[in-house]
Image (cartoon, rainbow, N blue to C red; front, top):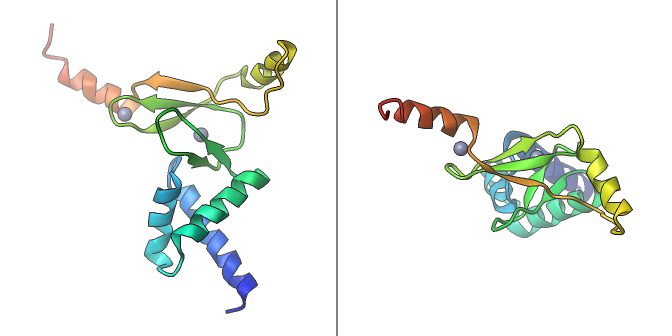
Length: 136
Ligand SMILES: [Zn+2]
Ligand SMILES: [Zn+2]
């Protein structure tokens, strides 16, 4: 297989993993693509993800105390982290875009912005409610 075509296939596999997985870490992407592409090396996956992030094709999300995650949703949004299951969820805020411009007004040139919420996701909240119905 010509090198260029192989590269295209590798990129497609990685993009597909980003579609299927929700805010995966590079390791999670690697583990996913490896199932169908056993010859794809960890180094290649990490390199391609880095290149995607660099070119703005995916967003690299850095949350406190967690490995970098990769996000195909490019629209401005924050993230909520569930303290029960550890899941990462998109949080869309209507005024998100103005946050960065407000930062510039206050004398700092923001290049990116990471807004992180801590709490409990819908699924865990439901489970929690079911478990606590007996408690008065
Ligand atoms: Zn949860
Ligand atoms: Zn996201």
